[in-house]
Length: 285
Image (cartoon, rainbow, N blue to C red; front, side, top):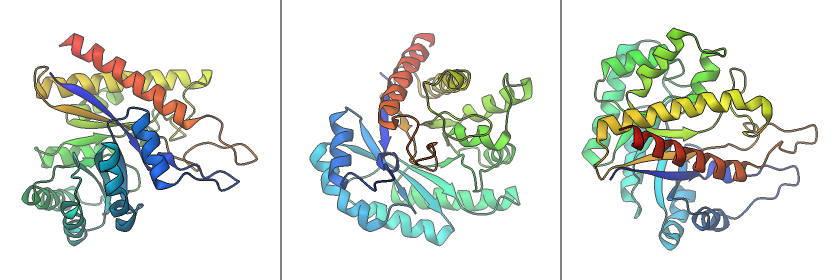
């Protein structure tokens, strides 16, 4: 039976409080495991190879699985990343590529993407491409063209980036709904964060956040339905939903630098929300 596995971001475990307090690497990993998350994510390009290597025995100790987000600058750079990833004792479910090449010519970007996919395939490591600001998938329309050029490309849906980049108003107009639906037909994994058209991450439970939270629930449900349509309800496959509520400056702070909400509690709310939507998607099949 197909299932949803919810992961927690290691980047999201940072506090960046005014007093400078942070949990240790093991405390972060233990907290994720104790809360019942299936696994965690590291961001290659933000987290160093040394940090990730240090975490490997802790992942094994606490029984956590792994995904990566990788900020990739070139074909040789991805070869270096894959070589490192393949050498580690815990192998990832997949790598989400954030392609840091200029989205000027879609054919050129498609060719580089195919090379990255070939590098992954040769190493036996699954790779997808994440839709993300300030990279090759910065714009939704360009990303859809890239998907057309690379028909076997599957995507990681972090639609907080998409909403901010496109600056869609509520309610979404018909063409916006159509374009998001086109993207979601190839969404293989999902990142959990709620945005508005102006802010990439907002507190989940504020009253003014609810129309935007409802929009993301609608998108995640549609994405789960599409995933199940591709994989089949009876498959042994698992869909990954990554709670990725970033620390300041993603998290909004007050005049004293204190966050307006508790991101850890919100990650648990996101997990519960995703699980409920998954059950609804399963019932719809």
